[in-house]
Image (cartoon, rainbow, N blue to C red; front, side, top):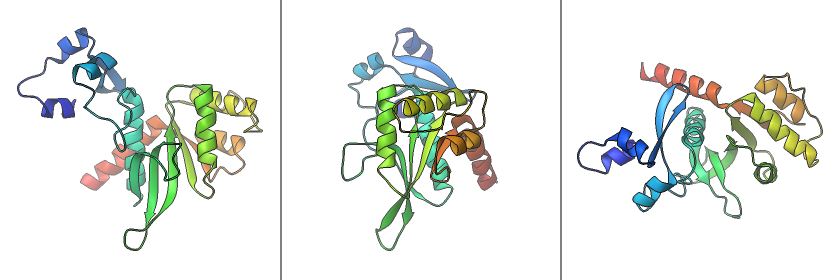
Length: 208
């Protein structure tokens, strides 16, 4: 909404835009966000946001919020971060990529992350294969809750990509990572809500 408000003169009747189907009101971690619907995108010629460091204009707000918080989390670790990053080889796009700074303009890929808020089996398989093609790079799956983790694991186990399926009762991200992956230090599941709280706490400490 900040982008929209900054791009027009006068006041915006947000309730009216919701009624017309141009906006959807969404909540992420008790915060209010507006999602510009496909109809809203058409109304502005889809020029609000798209592409590298902006993403898909039709992604739901919860996905974009978790992408942004993942990026902030990695920046707080001193890494250089890009969102919706496409490697030079092409054929894949990572929601977040973080790099260790090097000499001059040099940098080394250190972390790649995918935010998963909606399970599509064929996409989960592609995400896994894309992530797995980068050896020695930390890989993060950022999800809204552990039910999504269990679904991802089930899809990957059914296709032989993972060998161990943790019990459905496990609701701890670290334990799920340890049981599902052979190398949990390189692969890990991260709770999006936990990430938001951690970044907000860190940013608050920095502001003070």
